[in-house]
Length: 96
Image (cartoon, rainbow, N blue to C red; front, side, top):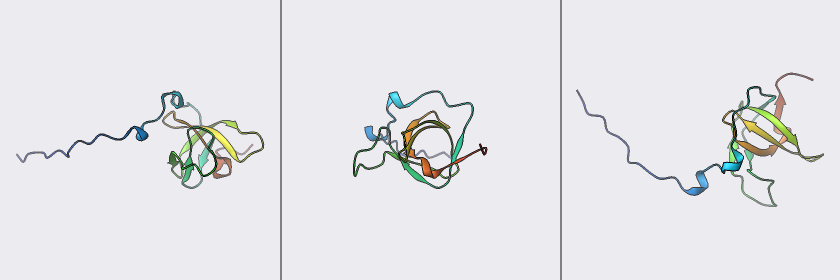
């Protein structure tokens, strides 16, 4: 029987961690899906701030809050990660 070779273990940087205050139980129901890959932030972004990650096209999310009349909203993804992203990139799962 051939031996199994394991890859060398690597430690991810602290920037790869999701902040504890941005994690919660995954939602049971979803309200929207992501139309195309789009960036997200863990907090409201400042001018020229790099994104913290990217939501994949087709991902289901639950809309938690829309930021007033602005283009941003807060959503929770399938893994329970709460992020801020562009509302225009979301499509309702069911028409109102």
